[in-house]
Image (cartoon, rainbow, N blue to C red):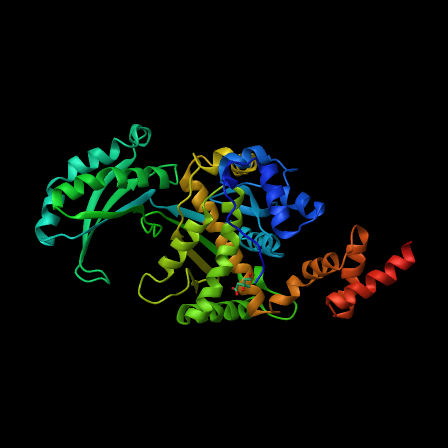
Length: 432
Ligand code: MEV
């Protein structure tokens, strides 16, 4: 066992620079390591980051790419994507080009309704308690709405209340009150949590029970965004396969995800490959969307594909993705992170619903790219060149050497760290 001690009293009170020094002595990092951890050369200054979360020592950068070719409801969009994985931006752009040939994506969305939950236990008469809560509906909603006057002023806020009864649980029976809140253009977590906390004492008084958890639900199944794409066989045709054959393969790929949770998980990961990067670029809580997406995928009791695919009467491939997408364009990191602000501006979105619909399109596009590749040449082919570049870089190649090493490895079909090092040595000898 080492002697390292992660109990650093008062760490949170130090400046980011002082915290870095603490981290340095904790793990014997050198100055280069510290420079890497500090980051801060980008648009998000360490000072600003220090106001966003706790115990900040620096900032961490990721590539920001822009997906092209998207046409959504007749309007062209460039989509900012922040992600570390090669091929995602290229795949989404490629798929958007295929969809563009038949006019582009069409979208729709529900209102921005979210649920705040209050858990009530130790209730002697659950049925009576339920009636009492419902009889005081307006009072409870009024108290909830007093917490978020700005939301109410704009036409949103808590608008309904439900009571759910769980007769058995590991700790006994419980009532769960749902506040249904229209969050408009906000993601809404803060407003909902404040509302849930504010009404809890009233619910305790009304029921004689004890309120424990007071928190939003991330299963936002009343805040859905939908994207639809049509792809013609001609757009999918390849030298080695007709468009019809590709569609056949893609429908088999979908069918696999529809019936098998092991496959559905990976299929849905491919969808979220397109969505998470847009969420990160625009300063959203991507963990919230991820958890909601997976819960929604299991809403019928068995985890399945978030997208559905079929062949229409003209023989086109049609895909639909409908899923919870709790995003906001006001408040949170969208306001604090300068790059998130600029990303939202690039997207030109006027509402949270519009942003959610764009995310759905990016997700469907990623799904298309993955299914097409999987149903044809396989996923590795497309990954090869970026993968080779990464291997070349991790072997120490910089500048033009990255291209030279990676191209040679692809030619040799031998993309391995050992080969990258060998090539790097050979080429460095030539160039020096
Ligand atoms: C890899 O990041 C994503 C895929 O695995 C998605 C899929 O299998 O559909 C290619």
